[in-house]
Image (cartoon, rainbow, N blue to C red; front, top):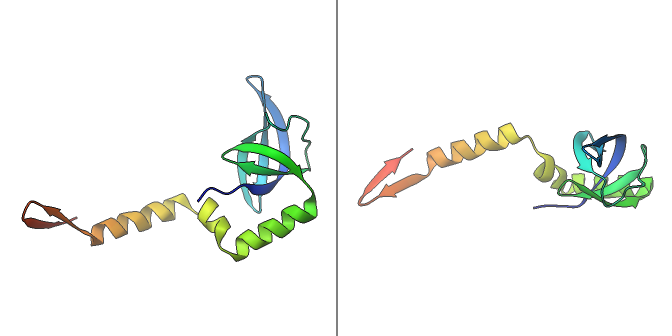
Length: 107
């Protein structure tokens, strides 16, 4: 699932003519493009979707939304540990038989 998630702007810099920010999503920091919200400042909150800041958000709304997403397990789904997810997927594939013609092949 892809969510629009609130985060706090930690720093802003210009890269190749584009304003970029480091944004904290409750402990997970990601690089975000500020092209759609060019006047966003350090310390402000924004809603981010697929790497783009979409709008400014007040701190209380951001905190409430993050708490709700965390309680529903959506932050783990959105920002979970990719190494653990890959390992779980690999283990799941090992347990699934693959059929090749008439024979069953185990991976």
